[in-house]
Image (cartoon, rainbow over all chains, first blue to last red):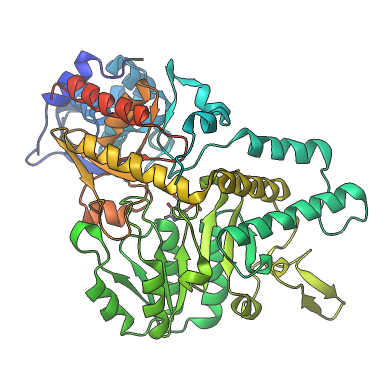
Length: 132
Length: 413
Ligand SMILES: Cc1ncc(COP(=O)(O)O)c(C=O)c1O
């Protein structure tokens, strides 16, 4: 039950891809008022692929580490591939089981990223976002 | 005053000898809900196992016994908070429902466009949102008494807001975030002078300190049973009899009427007028048992125990670098309830409580249902909170202090 594995702590202390992106193709801001986590995802998209991903925000170690890893992970992926990602992808990416109470923290980054893609395609939120 | 025998008390709470994540459970989340002694747990199973029957309408032995025990529990609660009689005790589901009952019934009948409603900046959502909704529906104005130093109520702001002659003032007796204990009696006196009706949110006071509603002089007082050793699903609203007589019931139907014809109806007498349908009989009876338990230990001694634990916790935690404690410095006039909210520099409260969890320690992290206070005034996204009750020990505080060390080590601080 070690939620705070070295890798999580290290991504939390030294996050990758953190900061504001200038002129992103898509961005979305979301928060989890229950915990006070706050997240913005920025994407550069070219030819149906994510070429750059960044995040900004504040929150617990799980939500921040997850955003740091996810923005690494999606670079170079096609929009279709990212569309397939779900909570299980996040759990295997983190390498820990956040448990029911923290799952929302872990998936906040993916939820925000999917919202960013939907707004890019000018589509309303769908089930795949809501169930995250 | 003789100290309480915590060892013997702990024996009465089955959950306190269980483990969480392999460690003995240290339950430090009493402001959210308290644990239950076996006497309370047995009272519930005894009702269902031996004399389960609906109250009021049965002319047979077990129905009479259920009715008697349910009514008796109201008398016990009435004595505990020094209400005039059990006619002034309405059972609800919780403090939230008690406050909503007032906002919806009294508020509906008495609040008009442009009227002022007064609360404070330290309220729990339960004593804030019902008034926001009422104000919005009626076009009334909701005012807040501001908080000053140490997040205490600012007396100048109280005077200023009262000069607007609010129709009602609702405030918390003890803050669930800061532990502040407000001087309910003096605030009530001032609010009455300004012509306001007064509701006191006693969710955090009734379980932990002697409450004297007639001494305070408030018109209404709300509490939750589950925070005072009772089961969930039972709470109470105290109201002065003449006020409750004038208030309309919120829900109508069975049990709350004296008579019905095809053409008309007549309300039942107090307190039944406000309890439509079959109530939470087991919960009411068990709340009576919880009151017995508190009386047996002595509320004054419970308060003394919590005060000493709280000072101990504040003093030990206060020495840890990077830990900030919020709320009244503990030695002012009314002291502080057994609540210590804190932040560890650079670490989100969820991570703090997650690591506590791993050590078998239950604390709460979040905005504690006082989001404006935490995020707008204290300006933290969330806070960690320890809160004590009669069964907590200094050893548990020591474990919490050690857990903070572990938090800092985990995050390499
Ligand atoms: C000050 C205060 N008021 C009201 C409530 C609401 O209590 P309940 O959820 O039992 O209705 C709480 C509970 O946390 C509280 O601390």
